[in-house]
Length: 138
Image (cartoon, rainbow, N blue to C red):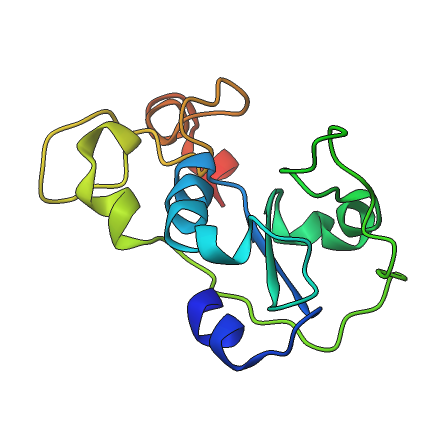
């Protein structure tokens, strides 16, 4: 989705690629590198942001360029408003295809199902299934 947007946007436009999954951001950043390594004045800019969609309003005003020599600078033209939002919600094939992520129903792996891979925060799906009683699940 981001690649399609970046192909039609104008120089200086910014696409924030927000995902809670660091692996998804790494993959997207690799695919969209052409839109990251520049100042944003000759083509649109892609800025990866690791966050939950629910936190966008809080996170976006403090987003920095990840590739600036000075360690990042706040996007000076971002004034807290966006022209549009595209939300691609749900689980990706990348998450299902890797058994270690805990989403796969075709391969053996841990029953984890947390969106942030390697995240030790929060309960795993296995903990919920094995430790909650019926009333807690309702």
